[in-house]
Amino acid sequence: MNRIKFLLLTIAASTLLFSCKKDDEASLEPPRDRTTQYATDINDIEDYLKTHYLTVTFDANQNPIPTITKIEEGGTETSIWNQTEYPLTHAMFKNDVRVFTAANPYVGNRIDDPVDYKVYYLNIREGVGEVPSKADSLFVSYRGTLLDDRQFDISQNPVWFAQIGSRTSGAVISGWRNILSKFKTGTAVGNPDDGTVTYRDYGVVVAFIPSGLSYYNEPPGGIIPQYAPLVFTINLHSLKRKDDDLDGIFSVNEDLNGNGDLYDDDTDGDGIPNFMDFDDDGDGVPTLAEISDSFGNRYPFELIPNCQGTTGGLKKHLDPNCQ
Image 1 (tube, rainbow, N blue to C red):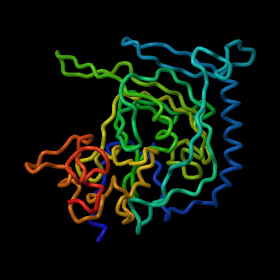
Image 2 (image 1 turned 90 degrees about the vertical axis):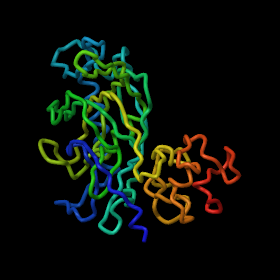
Image 3 (image 1 turned 45 degrees about the vertical axis):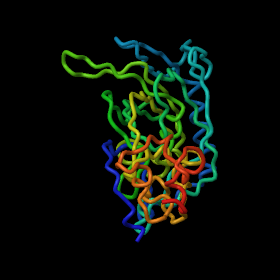
């Protein structure tokens, strides 16, 4: 019966950045120990940071364009590791990739990965708009290279990417989902003469991602080898708040404990997380009906009433004793 609760996600995005694990995809060899591989990755990334330098130019709208170049033998450029104009920093993340199966195609199980990953990054510009959640679709432009400086992908014009996926629909790699939560979107500026839109003041980040948070032993093809750390320059232009189950509540607002993991919020305990469940409290009344007034008008999220018809406390659509 629970299968009828699932709705397929429609995702408009390139396939290269997708990281959607499936248990029926056989690897050519058993994957390496993740802790051991991470130690190799972080050593290679730190060597890269000490042997490359950063330059930042600006386009006509004063948007920064970072470029990374290898320091040639005898070169006097200051390395990324030592430069201070855009200080190198890092954040620690867990791998949030999920393994989807034919029997469990949308919820899946979180991958077994004991590593706490250090992701180095350069905050070129934080941005001025909204902070994305892992539930959102993002409008980004980007460039990706290997540690040997070969480019494997680029999108100079912004494209839409879904942050999370399923067995049938891919999602961005874990490193993207995690690092972009530290940046903000920009502002859209329309041209009344030709209807075009440009973006300004958006977040710009250069991230150095260990293979465990990218493709690990299952690269998508092209020139990316197995176990390859990746360097991404990402411009976060805009975002769309998604409503995955079409229940009238943005998925970001169904992260009840606010920990960024949409899959561990399951009010009725039916195995379907709230952001995929059109009846969150399992009382037989769709969430959409419980968040609307007698005329069918939806309440703003912050004004969804409790059982007493007032605001505050447990919202009506999360209380199985209230219909």
